[in-house]
Length: 441
Ligand SMILES: NC(=O)c1ccc[n+]([C@@H]2O[C@H](COP(=O)([O-])OP(=O)(O)OC[C@H]3O[C@@H](n4cnc5c(N)ncnc54)[C@H](O)[C@@H]3O)[C@@H](O)[C@H]2O)c1
Image (cartoon, rainbow, N blue to C red):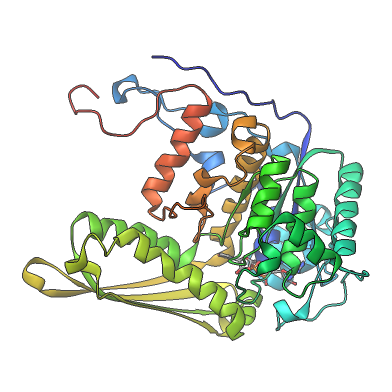
């Protein structure tokens, strides 16, 4: 039975994408979009650009591209800006990050050089390994938030963007527990004026964006919008939020493999994961405070996927360990090793070894693009925007934000089904649960 499509405004005009943090991920994303626009590369890894979704029965053979099915902003309409504590424009930052080949960067140098970082809101206490000069000064954190709002307004004017999305691509801040100042919007605003040490720079950007009704996505594991004050502000302003921590590399592998082992009821005694990486992110994560934030984000996925409370014989005693080692010679080309001690029929032990020679920012860039386009879609759809947290975008995150009282979904395949069914729902199509009987499906 046909259902009514949900109201979504058309994406008219330009969409501005602003990234606090213009390092490896942000510049690989910006350069990549430009390369695709100029027809010199393909948007591999992007669901919005390459993905399809099935409508109706399998025999209907109807699988449109996602970008033709829901009204997304077109790549030609994207404009870019950002903040960083280093003065490097996107060209210089991309050269330093060393992810993309110099020849490609030189081809699009004119485009990249025009993206210059606005001065950052930065506090060394939150990212100990960095020190830069391109930093805002203000009488308190409210003043800094107002400066960020002014930056955003100015960017909108000069770039001609009609709509905006902010995506945190800044460094991982130190581990930070929610405090009293995070518990309500009133307490948070008072804290901004009183310069509370509990308010991290990422929260200042998020507050500024949400105050202006702009969606905010968090690509790092920082607390940021994962506090009652800012999730309440998102709902109040009808501004979508999502996070935390882009799901790339080793954790992506984990959330692909663990559901498979569980599906076949194979047991796990241990899962040891170690990484070597040599980019600035690796250097920041060499600090124990920043690593702890990352560790928490990486550790939680197996617990939720494997459900040891339902399968104690298989997963109750799982020993899960994650390590990250800063090793400069590797640059952005991370190597992630995993050793899985599994057991099968009658408890007989087996092992799986994974050696993933991955490129972190190559895996993260398409996520930034998809999030920008989907968050903009959510903003134009009142039914999604009023919810604040966009759980249907859990697919992209290691620690998905979720409604209070619920647990996050980590299984990549359930996450994908949820995302695609949300899109079907928006267009008034039947949801596909794969529960139909073979002969009638
Ligand atoms: N690459 C991946 O696969 C991946 C996956 C998950 C999460 N992440 C997270 O994404 C973030 C970006 O990763 P990256 O590889 O681009 O790191 P990067 O170090 O190359 O870039 C981060 C940039 O943020 C800047 N920065 C730090 N604090 C800032 C602030 N307060 N305001 C403005 N700029 C600030 C730094 O100067 C740096 O240029 C990191 O937090 C990382 O943990 C990356």
